[in-house]
Length: 145
Image (cartoon, rainbow, N blue to C red; front, top):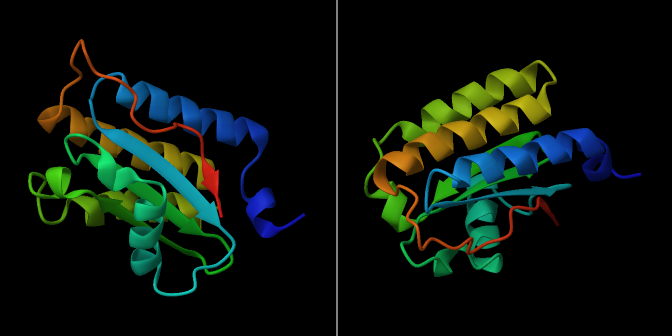
């Protein structure tokens, strides 16, 4: 088994998908998690590539957020689309990454992802509250590269 497959248990994956589902119940924003073995470049640059590969830039309100993890590199990044980045504070993603990094350093990868998703969802809710006609534009499943 690869390190990507060993990174999360099935229960961990279910908890992460549920965290995405719950976060998106309160916002029209879209949250994705992508995990791969290693990044071919800096984590943030690779996250931007994955963001586009997953068509996250095509959300109607430009309010997608990607949490990207390169397992063997021990690196991760968070990138938000223009709609959310124009509204959140400059240090928002840094403070979210710090919370996640503290969990990751202690080996609590699933909890770090769940907390990052929850924080992103709370921020998205402030600027992009859920609307009655909202549709889930992107899959909630974890993508693996």
